[in-house]
Amino acid sequence: MITLSGPVVPGVGGYRVLLGWRRVERLLDALAPDRLEGSDRTTLRWVGEWGRRQGVPAVMVAHESLLGLVRLVTGGRAPVDWMVDRLNARTAAMFDRVVCTTSWASAEFRRVGATAENAASSHGYRPSAKLERRSSS
Image (tube, rainbow, N blue to C red; front, side, top):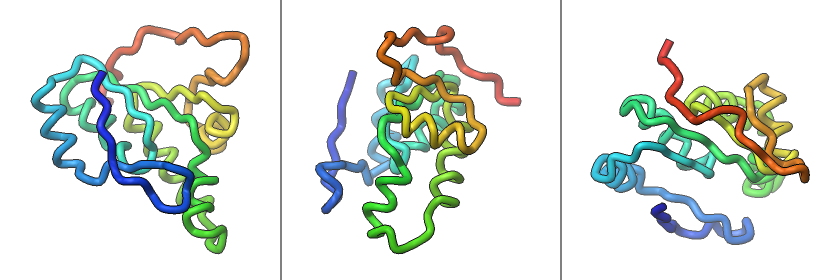
């Protein structure tokens, strides 16, 4: 596993983002991974699409409320539900699997009709199937 750090977003409790996507893409090209895991629905959504182009299966692990994060950044002054719904629908389409570790993340994907596995239960989580590349149909 390789972890990259990015700058802290002011005012959101230590949340970090990776802004140099070309740097990340070059690293992915050099590493030639056989699986991808993303956990940032804002700045790393594109790695699912990169995986699809490379034939590499990709999973998004969603743990935060994107709606809550966007409302925090905007101060709750703007109607952002439509934007978050669109981002979540696109995220689900870019990745082969979405696994939610919180009930509020799961609710956001359910709201847009996306399939997301809910690992938030206290009964233990077992993946529904082996992670494999979806066909590009």
